[in-house]
Length: 227
Image (cartoon, rainbow, N blue to C red; front, side, top):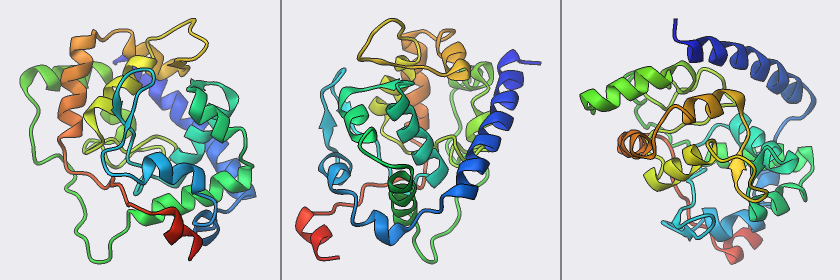
């Protein structure tokens, strides 16, 4: 058995327990989240907006992302498991209720009434090389076969996400000893370290090309104030 599948299974149990405990204590309010997103819309509310740290890449689409994942990511920035000066500064200013409300708001933004569900498997087949990388990394064991239905709700949807963001994020798990850059996660760190940068580019290019549920919903500060 692929050792990363075993590790991912253990991680799944741990994350479900921790997220379940969080969910039992705090319920997100999407309407409240709409009044708390002033620090978010400057980057995540602009179509194709690019960040320049640690390199130039499009900031991730978070509308339509799973609420438990958004909370998990914000917690990781707050606690330093994810290193990014801007995101950490924002995360440390948030309470657990703030995180839950923002997560509920952005998760709800991805819902479109009557929209067809994504197919269980991607309509675009990977190349032989990419298929081998997906199998080697056991990606589907966490993120789902179509990369949009993660088995653990605290894991992200990846399908259709900006490929350059996916590449920078994946590469961050290889980074060690940098006070400003990097991500600490036992499962993802182990996977990333077995991939070359060329592997990462091919893998993220494919995943970013798939149909997904993620999007950027533009929202001005004026519009936010009038809600």
